[in-house]
Image (cartoon, rainbow, N blue to C red; front, side, top):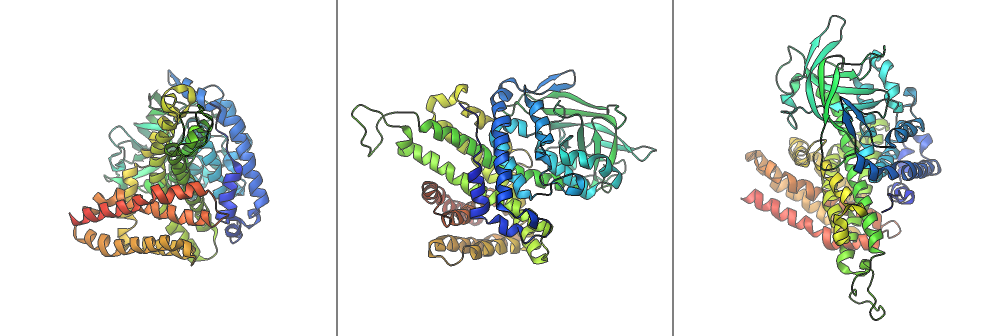
Length: 563
């Protein structure tokens, strides 16, 4: 079927009509000049055109041809390099980078819109620039002036690409087990030795250089995560010599064939330290947190791409007679008229629209956290980002896979064959539930690390903010009641028992995150419904088929706490 086409008007509607982003940006001195709906709408429209015309058409061939490894080198699928060169030369990677680093200084939320479009259009291709802004922010905040002078502008512009080298064969989620070693050299640099696996874009021909950011241990480092330091290893040094970094192979994967997932071997590769010794995770978390927001946006975008295909098919395919229709005798109805298909399509649309509101609000709060002159506003924004990012990453990547599978169902048998393209969405989406911290780890992070450590004060404050944001409209009373009830459940049931039974929160974590996601969706749908009555069918689907899960999750948590 036809390649995905971004719908710029839908993105602009959420940004300006629902979230009133321009009004929020006007409060930020560093971004006030960009609080112009005309300017931002033009950027979004041009992004949609570029993605639709240049990136989306490469998706099918990227999957079928895939990245090719030979003797340590990786050749990307046809058209990928030309598209990337056009991408960075047009300035798309530098949207939100600082002007002093060669960037355009636009709001982070505009970059979020771009990445949702890119992932919906071509997930495999987008893996390459997906880590760029996180790498840029990592170096900007932690690198020495010398490293910044040599690398920051190249990463800000996207001329060079970057990787995040964390995982090892024995050390996946538990980075404290990392064994890669960094030996000091007389000139102040280090020699890195070790093997990293699952490295997205570890080797390719898209850009002329690749900047590897690598977690490793110094000789005297203590065991565990506190002994990790962060190092920078370029593919090519400034004198043109190649680093002792080798791509041993690329993985044969279920999906994402257009993205090379590499096994990288470092053989005493010359490296520079980023930040302070033993503070590697602190520096790397800047990159990881940025990546987790983008993975949440992947979930929204991939689900939207699957929905677009399924909805288009349902508008063309005729099968049987739909209940309550008045078709001519002997004429089959379009399957979009059948309630079973409407339920699938409208339910996924409910997740897409609400997810977009939550994701864009999160990106907007990143701008507020960074630039707002009021410390109270910055603190509230930081609270939102800390609590909502793991929810967005986990719940929407799970729905991208489950909802993508439901969209495949709309096609019947045609969905299971390659011709229609929907099966690729399901295969590509599955990995997002695993990388950048598995969804189970996101749930533990939300409940154990970010809710219980302060006695749930932060999350309770967030729930109160959501209720306040809804105002006093009678239509939102059900959502306000649910926010209050969840707050009482946390305060009276979860927090007390966690103090006496330390392992119980780990049993609750998945249900707790999902319930939080559903409350955020309810808030988002109240905002959407209050804006020109947007998406009546999707709104009805949310309250009819999605929202009842909230009651189920509360019941499951209550049983776990009681048992």
